[in-house]
Length: 202
Image 1: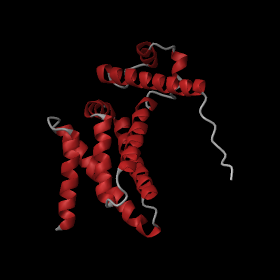
Image 2: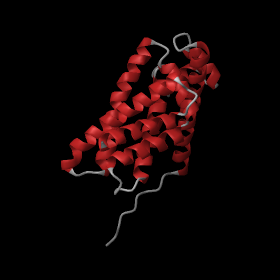
Image 3: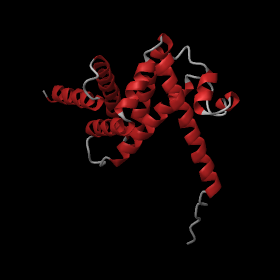
């Protein structure tokens, strides 16, 4: 029986995709630095384009708005979580798997970058509202990722509750970290899940 092979990615197309992603990241990093230095609302698209070394019109080939610059980091968070969850043994209890994946996601993403993004997201009322909505979106994403790994229909309610609890633990950890940045975000996340596990077992 002949098996149809997938066509390999053309080298030029692969290079273009990587180049586009690098440019997107360059623009996002330039914007983040300016947001921290000058404030989100006072930073102009012209300033971002100049810092990134691109024309202003080129900005709109990659992003629709200043706010969209921050979404690239959310995509990276989701990708890191999904990759970390995929590496967890399927025989690991889902709650523990989620805790492990969140820990590895934070480690790969980097606490310093997370701190900078958190500062920007709490710098205006509109961004704070977006941050709360992002937690809800992350909760849905986490449930979807868990459901892909454990696809048994009878376990879906349990997985949904685990996603809700997991995001709540993450929010508490981030809030504690914001109030006392002397500790690491990863440590605060570990403490949140340890407290949850302790309550469930008592």
